[in-house]
Length: 167
Picture 1 (cartoon, one colour):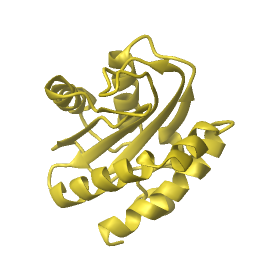
Picture 2 (spheres, helix red, strand yellow):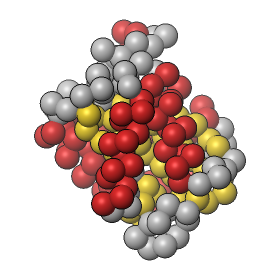
Picture 3 (cartoon, one colour):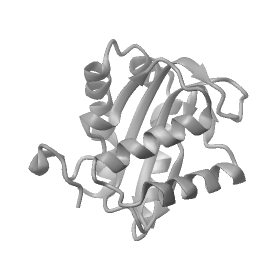
């Protein structure tokens, strides 16, 4: 169960306002991953952030989750995750994420998935990637003026993703 200020409203949401941030820059990819895992931990959605972060880094060692076009989608399924949540960071100064196209990343979506949610995990990953491949969707997110605006734009994405979960 994910504990938040607006418990009833946000318990089933993939994106929560406190998980959507705009950051000027990160020193490196590792700093970004740590920051985002901490966000998820502070929201109450994962009990052992170090373990979750190790799972994310393990996946990164196999293959970068920098999918190209300025997007990275680090993700992991782990026993320490209590509910499916997605943290979002827009990074103003692009970050080297060892992406497939070798371009810097400006949008990072970290997906925390409970161990038992394999089918939802794959659906969300596929739908998120498809949404972000469309130029107009990426551009809309990148044009956010502040965190509230970015969160509101991410709600369009939530509306597209939720049917994939059957809710």
